[in-house]
Length: 113
Image (cartoon, rainbow, N blue to C red; front, side, top):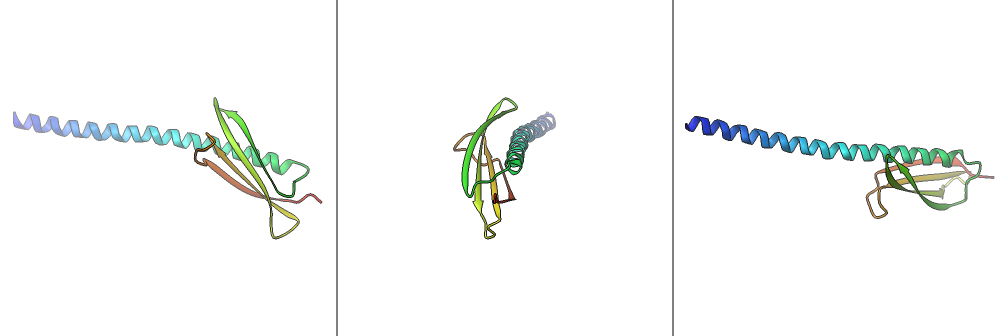
């Protein structure tokens, strides 16, 4: 009888550990999905910025885009560099305004003459 109770206790402990691992896997999968979507949005915004015919001297802009049924916020900062012919473009993407940055990309482009 004692052996049966010990075996049942071991099985219960193993089941609890498996449930914890599965729960962590589900949470991690959601985080990976959010970061992947945020990366896609940041890449799209960066491509749009680099494809624009003109670049401001220095500017910050923000916008909202819907992807996968969620609203995402992006912020783009265009800044001068040590070389006057080059501008730095930084793009950050968040799910909510005060939320953490889920994706951040940087590129450089020629300044508009």
